[in-house]
Image 1: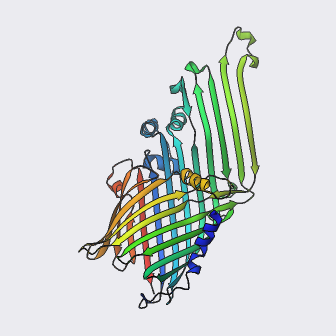
Image 2 (image 1 turned 180 degrees about the vertical axis):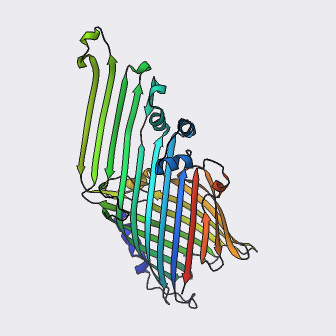
Length: 422
């Protein structure tokens, strides 16, 4: 059933291609080139100081360790994206639009609980008599290039304008790293007389012998699907899925799995002159495997349902509301199903978010302020974008509030786009 739905969605732009539109005949043919850069760094509690140290290195003081531990939440999330892209599109006279884009993408995402911070920076001495929990610790990083070919069509059905778009991408995978710990815990008895360590972890790492920026360690594919319904009262309803796909990494990659438990029950000495290994009561069970093998990883797919309406006020020209989600399951080869869709949403680390914005006529340029909640954090974020009246240049940020925060910031983002027609 799922496969049939996807086949219908993929073919939808071509199945409807026979419908013609007479409402936009005066629209000129044109070419366009779009250059865009996007940076987004976000953490729910730890702040920019932690991100800088973890991603770019540097000496970590004891004061910083204590501050990070105190700032940590029950579940800590760190997300970083840097995307640079160049795209070209051509609109024909009968409203077919063809496009091609090239993007260089860098993505880092991590989720871990507060106990891991405590153990990493302070060890287990301060937690005697306690159990530190490391369940559901995830670290994922990807670098790849994306070559996207797109086709869109605007047509008329029963006096309603329908826009459909489909795109397919080829991915050149450079590097991938992921550590996924389903279960993990450490119990420390008072005075350290007993230790009980257990963990279950899977690791996937591409070839570490060459870290060239454009190294080809994998190949992948993604698809985009979008449908926009334009109502007569200038109301638009849109649904889109972007970057739904994966990368197959080559056989030089390292795939490792560990399911281990270690128990140490202390040392009892009756005669110091007869001390030997036999008086140490400990057990160590370790199931570990590592090999060079192929594996598949998913890139984050974006799912968006949006509503927009043109306004006829003096300054306010548009209202836009969207609900967004992401889909990125951990490594597995199970077929697509409703349970896997749910799994991918949960394992993306991204909670569904809502975004509300408006478009304001500021005389010499367009001003687009917005507010959002959800995503990788539960914080409320404010966005602001400025664009020229010809939409040839656009700059903005998704975290306006960070510009007014002093010291340790929990978010940082920037966006710049240049567009030209000819």
